[in-house]
Length: 446
DNA sequence: TACCGGCCGGTGAAGACCTG
DNA sequence: CAGGTCTTCACCGGCCGGTA
Image (cartoon, rainbow, N blue to C red):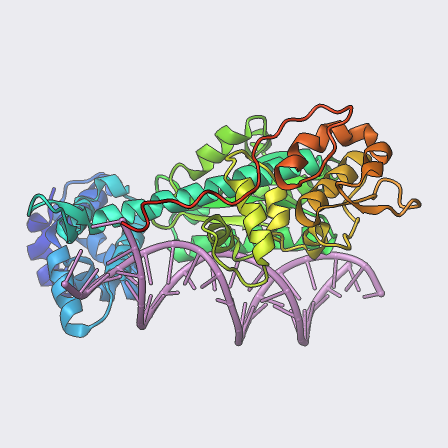
């Protein structure tokens, strides 16, 4: 059944609604009709018309008022934007999303939206920012630029997530949880904003309660849309194993609907790389938000700036160049996060400064790692293993080798990359890179 | 008093659009 | 092969009031 069949009835019985519906695109009108006929399982024209009218009345005001905006094609909307100097694309997309949610149709069934997206893509692909030198029709397009930006963002997220994983497992000895949090089914028919607000409120409450108890938790959270465009969370959370029970109880308290499928909702992380990849697979789409838990708010730009050797607020040039060299090795290394002061918890950040706060440091291995950071950063081993001896000495002093012989062989090769003057006596090491000015290049003159 | 949680303002991130 | 501007969104921390 399609709209034309019932239009006459609606026009006669509900002229007001008929007028409202005038501006709605015909594919939508047909979809409303088809959906309604299917739901009430009848083929009587009058009956269906009444149902459709009822549905329109039950629609929230803002959706009903925006039928015309929803129904504009991409070209029309561009024209409108040009005239009114406002940005409407996103607004229209959001309206259509809510409309789909009320009507309970999937985005891939929404032909109008699909066409809109295709038009937009086409427009981006044909806008050439810079032409090829050889040909007139090809070049660097707006679409290429957008893709590139997305790849860059993906890379940053992925790198930070790997470093964070390394830090939590190997430095803090925390264990990883993988959470998938969904809303109960009654939220699948409300507006997108409502669902979003609800799920984010619950998650905020969880974090606040953990914070209130001073439970350090780090990780990455990703908001994704389900098939029916209800948001849900994928979260990698790293916590102290001894607090796991409490954390789980808090989570289940906020998301009681996950009680039944508890073993799906909360899993241990075995393969972090896979897990990160899974979380980030859709990160290019709109309304996918990736954020890091327990890291500074500006961690993304911080990381990017350091990676490209640019200044960033409180980071000294020294720190930046050191961290950058660590990043260039392309392996997950949680100490990078310490070096760029990337944690929102100052106690962790202070580990890379001269007077570290040892709150989270429990064993000698961790103290050793802090020493190692100091060796990289200041060229000094602080003897944090045995504070009675109070030896802060430059690395190249020979007595260090004696005092720290327990682990010295372990770090020597690493230290040498940045530090001169280590005596090779008795210890195995090799020179990976020599410091020095590169020879002047000749081609500069030409 | 211990513990929550709603509200709000500031701020960084992301989206949208434009331009040779 | 970018880069600028403007707008909107999400999030965090702090304030504060409610409740056992």
